[in-house]
Length: 281
Image (cartoon, rainbow, N blue to C red; front, side, top):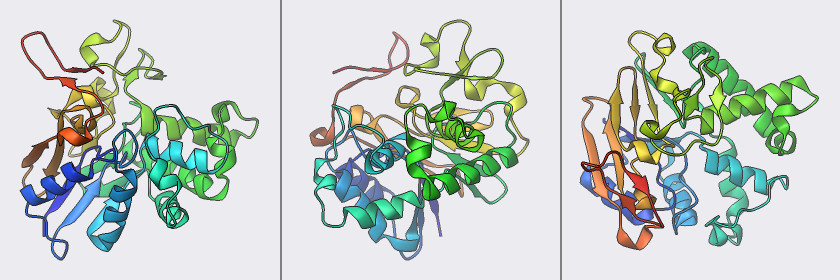
C-alpha cells in the first residue's frame, strides 16, 4: 500500500484524474490524503466531490478554507462571493449528502508518528497535541452549532467557546504569516519574499518544530512545493495554471501533472530569474 498526500484540487477533476494515472493509483491498495480545498475556483467542484466520496475508504480529506466557506453559505450565515464556482453543486440532487459528508471531515490528521496534516498551518506557539485538541473542539462546534461558529465576527462572539474555536478555525484553514509575537497576520496571499519586514511565514519560527515531525500543508499556491525543515507545502497552484502535486509518504517521492488548460482560472507566472511565482488574471 502507498499513501499519497495531495495539494489543493479546487474543482480540477481532469488534472486529478491525470495525477492518479501518473501514480498508477489503485483504490484497492492505495490511500489518498487530501489537504483540503477540493472545491471552488475550478470548474468541477461537484464532480470532484462525487469522485472522491466514491472512493470510499481509499480516500480521506481534511477541511480547507473553501469547504469552510461553503458550509457557512449552507448554514445561511455567509454570503456567496462573486467568484464562487460551485453553481452545479448548489443545484445538485445529492448536495445535502455531499455537504453532510464534508462537514464530518477533520481539520488535522496524523499519519504514524511522523506526518501531521493540516490545510494552512499552525500557530508557532502550538504543540501538535494542542493543535489537535483545538481542532477537535472546533470540529465539534462546526457540527453542533455551525451557524454560530461560521458567522462573520464569530471570533469576537460573546460565547468564549465559540470565539476561541472561530479563531482556531481561521488559523488551521487560512494562516500564512505571523508577526514577531507569533500571532496570525491577516490578509496575506503573496510569497514570503513579498511579506512586510515585520512578518514571517508561520513555518519559519524555529520553536514551532517538534523533533521527528513534518507538517504537510496546502493553501499557499505561490509557495508551490517547498521542502523546509519540519514542513512541506503541496499547493502548487493547479487552478492558477500551475501543477497538481502528490507526495508519497513511504519514500517522499513527489509526483506532479501540469494543470489541464480547460480548468485554469488564471495563469500563474512560473518561477524564473525574477523570483518566486505569482498569479495573474
